[in-house]
Length: 250
Length: 328
Ligand SMILES: Cc1cc2nc3c(=O)[nH]c(=O)nc-3n(C[C@H](O)[C@H](O)[C@H](O)COP(=O)(O)OP(=O)(O)OC[C@H]3O[C@@H](n4cnc5c(N)ncnc54)[C@H](O)[C@@H]3O)c2cc1C
Ligand SMILES: Nc1ncnc2c1ncn2[C@@H]1O[C@H](COP(=O)(O)O)[C@@H](O)[C@H]1O
Image (cartoon, rainbow over all chains, first blue to last red; front, side, top):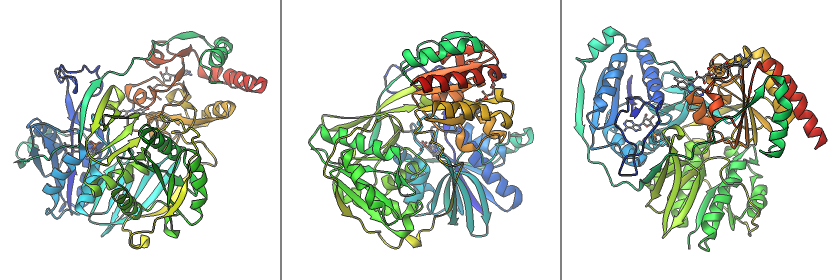
């Protein structure tokens, strides 16, 4: 098997963001960056296949500045075989621009599976995986939380509103990974050492013109500060009163 | 004049609320410019009967794709018809739902048309001919204003942001034939399992009652269900701890890696308020929190907090809500 996993470097979300002076981006000073969570589950999914069939090759691909090498090394430390940096001046917001660059890279790679995260935490768009699948003319299944591969067919579970869909598809295929599929392994010290020697190709890419651009960013209106109305069951009548008269939801 | 396409999602022969919301959003965009709204529905034979509902919310034309193979979601066949209709229709904007189905469909259509797409959109405007949308980024901690330059501009709206409004239009039915054989699709939905009866969907429910680890085990979730039942129009949600433990199905999880919801009322019971949970519910109109730890972060965003033991408070609240409802 040959598997590609597309991973994005995103800021750690556990912070108070500031808007940069240019007004349409967040200020990156002081932010920590890591692999997008969904993408770490995609890497894990590939590695679990490799665990069963060691002949499997797992290639991780990340588009961005040289800073993405750190993200790629993390995936290599987890156990991926080699990395590809699609080197660009920045990571555009337009997922279609990213998808075209990734599709061009993977087109002739002979991959049986191409894995993506369901969505990236920063752009919160959830579009790149399915777009790459369409561009490559491959079957696509999005948002999977269970996966079985038997020979040249796969079956997967997708969470839908209030239930689940069970889907079958032929390989090669593009899949986007939801949470629940697995828990990502941590790179072990041995893996971290080994990762330093694994191949990481740097390939400059020329990105297309974006058709969607961020023109402004702002911090959403803060909620009014929380209010504790009382303690224990004694506070229930007041709560119900407030829900009726103030919030008008009852 | 801006003509707008709206994908009106159906399931099991019924319109989903977000389907009406897509038509409402389309009507608002088209209306400002004297444009026309074409709503699209796909489903098993008989789904055409939903056209009148779409007309009521503002569809001038209802494009209907009926086929026995559309009783379940058929991603490849539906994407092919939709891309074809959107390409041929010369629309300024095409609106999709951000839902399990819409989030699968819209990027396929975007790639077929060779344009970008913005999902989880909370507002759409036309300014000097440019399509400008609001789209939360960084797990909702930052709000982006995004410009879509291509025609058509593809957007997928977030649920509960465009309240369906009655705006009757003709709703003339037009048929769309499948492109190729729907049975030849490579990706096939074999089975759909729905969790438990007529339960309201989290994305559509006006009230959500959610339980966290404070419930201590699945055997106590009847408290959450009874409180939801007392409100009458409520769905049950949960934190990741709860779904990971298997106390509730994964589809109930609210948060960064689960569902994003913004109901009128969100009741958080035994939930600490971790940022990943808040990311999924902080835009709720009114938030109630019940937690025994007065330092729990959930109280920082709760409009009404009660400190104390949920096992004492929730039964009292169930009784009080029932009584308030009974009094009307
Ligand atoms: C990458 C990543 C993604 C994540 N995504 C999500 C997500 O999408 N959604 C999500 O919810 N979480 C998510 N999490 C997990 C999140 O960080 C928290 O661990 C989780 O939300 C905590 O769930 P909880 O509030 O139920 O449990 P806890 O944090 O353990 O809180 C339980 C609360 O119950 C209270 N309590 C206990 N007993 C009682 C009682 N008798 N009466 C009243 N109160 C009581 C306690 O005071 C406590 O505040 C994610 C984490 C990571 C790392
Ligand atoms: N710059 C990137 N490099 C590599 N993969 C990416 C990049 N951006 C997005 N992806 C992949 O596409 C998925 C969906 O991203 P998005 O459409 O931005 O939400 C991510 O989870 C990644 O798997």
